[in-house]
Amino acid sequence: MSSSLSTYAPKKLQRRFENKEKEWIRSDNRGFLQCRPAFLKTGSGNAASGSAFAEFGSTKVIVSIFGPRESKKAMMYSDIGRLNCSVSLTTFATPVRSKAMMGFEQNEKDLSSMLYKALEGVIKLDTFPKTTVDVFALVLQSGGSDLSVIISCASLALADAGIQMYDLLTSVSVARVGNNLIIDPTNEEENEQDGNLTIAYMPSRNEVSQVTLTGEWSTGKINQAMEISVAACFKLGDVLRNILRESE
Amino acid sequence: MRDIDIVTDMMTSSEGESEGFAVEMEEEASRHIFPIHFYEKHLLESIRPDGRHLSHARHTTVAFGPVSTADGSALVKIGDTTMLAVIKLEVMTPFADTPDEGTIAVEFIMPPICSPLVRPGRPIEVATVISKQLSDAIKSSGMLNYKELSLVSEKAAWMAYLDIYCLNADGSLFDAADPTAEEEFIMDTVITLVLNSSGQLVSMYKPGGSVVAHISTFQDCFVLAKHRAKELMGIMNDAMQLMEED
Image (cartoon, rainbow over all chains, first blue to last red; front, side):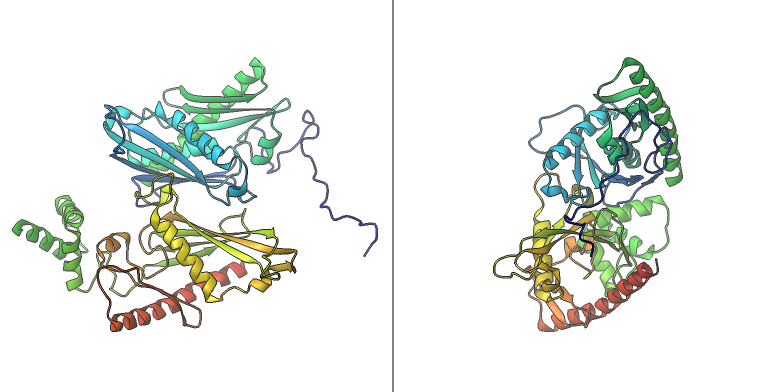
């Protein structure tokens, strides 16, 4: 054994984004405007009215739809239907066992409310008065851009369940790292990002149901990021439609 | 009552062949409205609605390593019942009374996606019951050598978290006695047996219920369980071999 090794320490992690302005390659060799390879499937569970599985790179999500079914007894009478969204993460979704992690429950609550807000304007709530549609998502593995994967997967599952919507909802996330815009960021990239834009968009109606912008942005960059994500949403919409057509 | 009889008669005669949408609808309706009647009709013929013989289990598949963020994982499907078991290892300080042993924590989780009966918030009773049962079966069976989980005596040992997620609940969550969810709903009682690889009984569980089973019934159950255990061992060994080849 060499005596120079006095302490035990893993190799110093190479910082990919040390100089963000310089040319760099994404860890999975993707282009800046290239989404991760995606796999989507409808009907993975039979007890639910509809369900879908989505896999974008290492992000894996299952969404099940229940209902329209009787609302909880405590609920007040409602002329229009209710939407109930709940996102949960598995304990193995993150590298550290997540139940021990700080803010784990808060993260679940945030994702649930974001999902609800994205979907509420898209579903025709007046088509199921007095009843509730439950949208339950389970994140099997969190690998970045989780919210957009959950939203796209949920809209696919809703379509599978036959819940009427104004249009399929697609969602894409764009991160700003230095001067560069990268689409569909992974966890590693999200940790290094200077800003993030997540959009939920209805391609056929050309309408936006949700935009979340964090970090520091210039107006020009926002416009550019919007254009990129809308273009990606269009493509994702076609993908979702093809999957629904094939599953018939 | 006469009308119902006609409906169910049609149903049994059309088993296996569809006679149009109307018949199918009535079959479905009678199945939901008179489940006991529906199953009695099938039991007379010694066949179950999904075409299985009474003692036959559903098709079972096992896949290893579906979760890359875990230290070990397996996906098991029995019919439509789907379970994902995941092991995560953490280092802990061993307990004072067992300084050179690690430990395992078993949790069974039913997320709301798996069944219409589960709502977000508080876990449902059955999940807690199965969690305890599983934990007891694993800990009392002696299948794990806790000494192997020790790293440094009195200082460090592995804490293994075994989390089992139910992705789709269609009956027989605990293992493989193997009725479907629908059958379970009308059953009087369940008897669950756990066996180890050499066919020895490790745990037996009968959760009360209205029917007090005869000793001979238990003996029958044991024979069935033994047969099923052999079948499962075969499936698991095949899956292990496949994994090693990869």
